[in-house]
Length: 332
Image 1 (cartoon, rainbow, N blue to C red):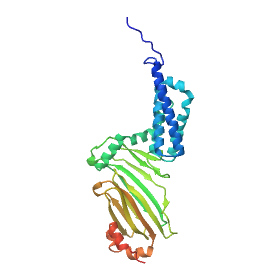
Image 2 (cartoon, rainbow, N blue to C red):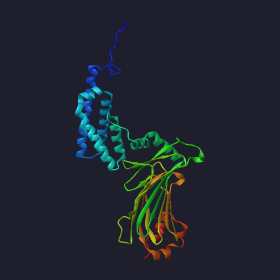
Image 3 (cartoon, one colour):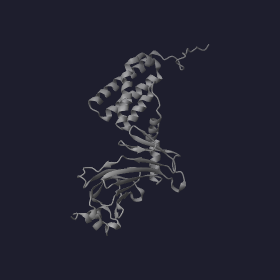
Image 4 (tube, rainbow, N blue to C red):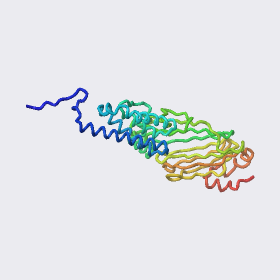
């Protein structure tokens, strides 16, 4: 006669043995201990590695509590501080626009019994997923996805910046998934398409789609009264090709225009003057990605602009090296 196995309504796979309960209880207590130590260490020294350890332990603890209600019931309020810290730290990281760490916190809280899915964070999770990253890199590599940066410096020495991420599958043929997710970290104050979560703009991109990020207008750096100031900005990517243009209104003159590479090949550079102003362009040779810092001093010199820079060789287009040789030392 077959032996009858007793089952509980709350335990569809059979009532857990005492050994199992002790094992998971001990494991949960270990994760509580590690999480508390990591949280204290982070408060004493806010290093990201402590947060990663904390969220990892919180995630594992939450998974045990969700899968084992008996352990959750036994520990009761002993785990409440770990849950509270998980949510509190995640919100703080989101406010500081540290989206990678905030996403770890979101993933950790979702593992808990009381955790929940948040649509905006789900989009961020999709965008950061290795499969999406690989698809974006493949589209960028075959020329189907790129970014265009447009910068304007006004006569008032203020800077307006707009970034466009576009997808145009080559030859009209699909070269990747029907939809990929564009992710762009923000500094604060920008307007962006799609969803902004934890300091990152996330937008779906199908073939033919574009996504925009418009930055708040800011002054040039270290302005010398109303005579000029510095423009310094890092542009480019290690995976996505960029085309960048900087336009200055008539009467503004750039000095010592430099590009300092950080990754990839140096982009092609071009400086051109005409009656509509000054234009600088950077784009990767063969559509290859590049990453580096663009810097220059922008000075207000309307008379000199009319007398000198609307003539050859400035109107024919010069690369940075040749332009700097011709304008240094700058005539007074």
